Length: 397
Image (tube, rainbow, N blue to C red; front, side, top):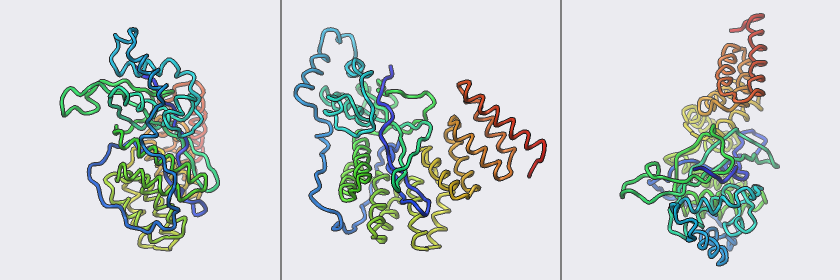
């Protein structure tokens, strides 16, 4: 049984263009890390204190009326034949078609009352309902066709989170993957790439990271800072919030503090390749050649299961007409998610630009195998014909 939570709201990505601010706020699909390290001790006096930061209990608390309606449904005779996790799904399934997804990050009570919000909002609804009946929920990030937009000097990306309403543990050592679950996931695509599963504490860090993104877009760096610190209170190793704080310090002109936070991010068990990209921007800004070389070397060997990371980096190098680097990161993306049609086509164009038509043909043939509709297949066929004509008329090495 699988139903859902939709494409989450907009998240911020880092930019390595010299003309645009670097930033990342993505839903990272990684399990909560057990090793924790102390956060950098940098001055926060520049950020206004006393910010009205919503608390986790407020994100997950329903009204008395909402609780009563849910419990009446959950305990009804009609639901007696279903397992508890299935009753949670059945309750949401009545109205799932009425949800209007508008990209807003809303607490559970608001999302349930208005039937609006992004997939993170709906995941909060699932968590709030499950909490009422003492059912555990796990989460998983998933990634579909990369979608990027821009607002002012920030890049925006939409990605996705799934809720897993879990059956009770069979034994004390049962992992998430070993337990039966109902996946609540709205408008998912079977070709979406999924990350590792994570727990509720990590999920709340994701929520606060999204709220920090909202604050930064609203040009409120102080609120973005304190929301990010709240995320790190919940999960000290949550690298997107470490990255965001580093970027905020850089925006405020405190490059020494920014550097401390970037260095801290590099020490995380699963640091994002985009932390490296953001830090590289600071190295370029300060003309620190040694640091640039170090970060470029890290970028070459970085591993990241989030295709948005590679897509973002590839696009920035392409825009700077550094086609060799762009092709390298597009190839990493194709290796991670070969079914992304737009990416295959873009990589093929880069290979043609570099005079590597045979590689272009290989990429197009690979992408064609994942084309699941007539329109996509037709696009690949046309591109293949064009590239093969180039090969036959003037082959280049």
